[in-house]
Image (cartoon, rainbow, N blue to C red; front, top):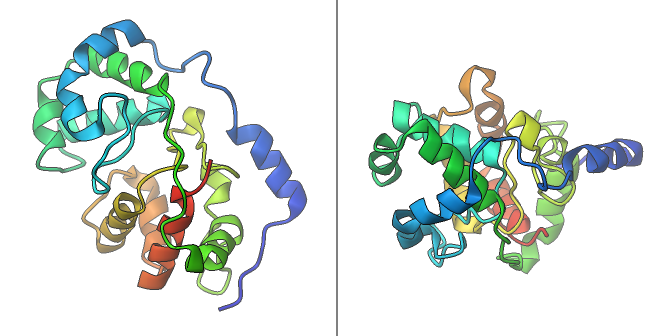
Length: 209
């Protein structure tokens, strides 16, 4: 498979665009109140937003607009999960905003790649995509170091469990997850990825920092 890497000038501009600090959250909420409301979340996501179960996502340092959007999606049913759907149903808009700002303020735990042997393949896909398969480079939305883009509600990926990321890509590919809305960005990308691609990408983003 031929991999076409993105031009250096494009990467540089994306780096400037997607690595803004979270000092001023784009969501109006109280991190202090969010911490007080976060106790039920710790069972799956850990006391500091870093999950010990690879199938449950790390949410420490995740941008608040993305967290808020996902909580609303779980509440309105556009995203389904046996655990999260029930939890989100009892949250008010204020609760969601407070939780989003709180988790955004936490420090994500650094991790290493899951499979060192797949780094080259994962990096090439992440940074350059696959022009022959019509796969866009992940860097365009998620940034050079996986910090995401809060203004566009694109999530941070760095340090995310590879198993969790792989499941989300498979769910997008199968159509089980449709919470990217009318844009279909992730579904269109995931349906062009092979299982080997999914494993390599998921391993690679786990090691981003």
